[in-house]
Amino acid sequence: MLIKIVNPNTSKGMTRSIHAAALAMAAPGTSVDAVSPAMGPASIESHYDEALSVPGVLAEVAAGEQSGVDGYVIACFGDPGLDAARELAAGPVVGIAEAAMRTAAYLGRRFTVVTTLDRTRGRAWDLAERYGVQRFCAGVHACDIPVLELEEDPDALEKVTQACRDAVVRDDADAVVLGCAGMADLCADLSAAIGVPVVDGVRAATLQVQSLVAMGLRTGARGEFATPPSKPYTGLLRGFSL
Image 1: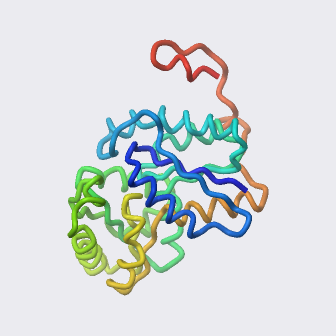
Image 2: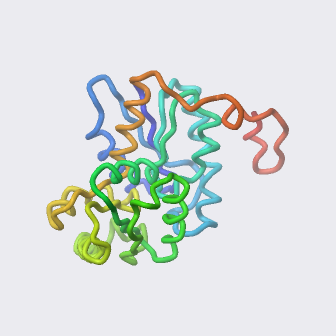
């Protein structure tokens, strides 16, 4: 089984940490590849960033279809391009926000989300509603660390730990969902520090894709998620014509 993890931003360092988190979940016989697209934003912290990350994500999914990939993880908490990727892929595609929120709903009555910048909180609430877990989501909070500084700030772990601790108390939460793939390498330390389960979407999504492939399941290709109709694309998108 080959699982491809697509980090929709172009940060190679973040892709390496995402890869390590995913590899830790791989069963014997499962290979995991992690990539950043050749084009896209350095980090995703706005609707604009998210929209412009999608072509790079879809290019990586299209390349995976040519190289025998069995399933995909979209490793950004906004789950950019998820529906479009499901139209392209022969196997299952799972976004880390969907995977993390659904997993956290198993762990207690309510979970809280800790994300990066305050401006991204609305997107997390939108996704909780979309995925049917809004009743379990007690709050969405920001630690106000830009995505790329998660790798560079020596105090990042301390700041995220305090944000998680505060969120658990404020929301009376049973679990924490990490609202950024760049927090994947902090997960174990955070859980030990705050004493409640901490869910990293990279690990959760990798396991879910692995399970779906093992069961022979994929996105239903009838109706909405059938292969998109062929038509010409022009300009910079010419290469995306099917």
